[in-house]
Length: 376
Image (cartoon, rainbow, N blue to C red; front, side, top):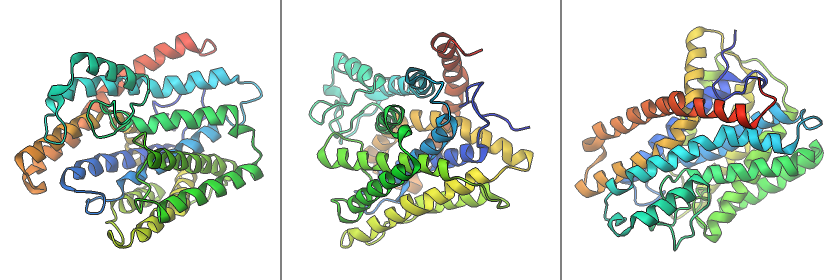
């Protein structure tokens, strides 16, 4: 019998457990990507270079799963119920991520940011803004590095995830498959243009309220989320043995590939990003949705990875700030700081699991009971 992920409501359709597992693999790669930021001067020389593409993979997964779960419900499900469901699923971890970020803030002293100049009042305002997903403008955010959410950087993708869900509820779900296909192609062309001819030579954008970041983040959402929705409509499963391990290895390799083209040929890396978001990620999602786990070990691995994936994504970054400050202040190499890196990884996984069991699941059950009156 298929073990349902903790991400599911009791009345949702059966989960794609391999997709849950792949989401966890991608979340682990994001964690390592952020660890290696401590040793990079820019994305040009960063190891595990393409970890930022995990966001696009998440958006495609989200669009696919939401399309699968809700596309056939709109005749009976009010928009407000959909919004409530997404709020219940997403927001508890947004709040706890902001609180953890606030608690850790004053421990993150580093030459890159001077937290001693930030008052308790400003920290409380920043915490409330982060918990409510209100982005900070570049001149107002308390860390001074132009992040939309300076207490917990990854919250920016949840900001766009909410926008995608709202667009889906009010607009995109009404599109015919043909019109949605055109929408996806146009958004994909825009994102490819940003990747290949844009200012960065990549699509690592969206985390700040600057012009390029707003454009890049919007294009990333509009293509990847919509592509996932389209994929769910066109999906016809095919069978491939061992698909979880094949797809997991593919995700790890694609996100770990070194920078391509250097600073002299930015377009080459943009072309790689385009290949990933436009072709390879949709293919991986398609194959992952087609497969089924056939042994208990793989099923348990997929369920565990799926369960901790979102909590891990939302709670690890405050400790990355701390790790970053430690590495910079002590002028450490990766080998010298490896025990600390492993502690961050293991500690983040344990914290994610504890947050899931002790906070996220109980809060979602409480909110479901009180906000979704049809739930049994």
